[in-house]
Length: 71
Image (tube, rainbow, N blue to C red):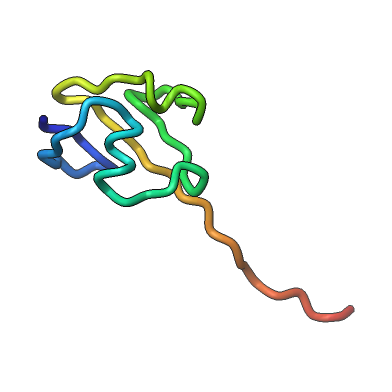
């Protein structure tokens, strides 16, 4: 199935968002997912089916930042 993932077309064999994360080896708690401009809750990953041409944004949360020095 041809999907657009983070702006790039990919041919991936999966039927749900949960399958997609498994194929890409991504832990569900490490990512937020937008499907066709709509956020999908983690509780709905297994029941959210994908179709040809869907646009998916995988949004990863990163820790860190600039360290504050004393004032």
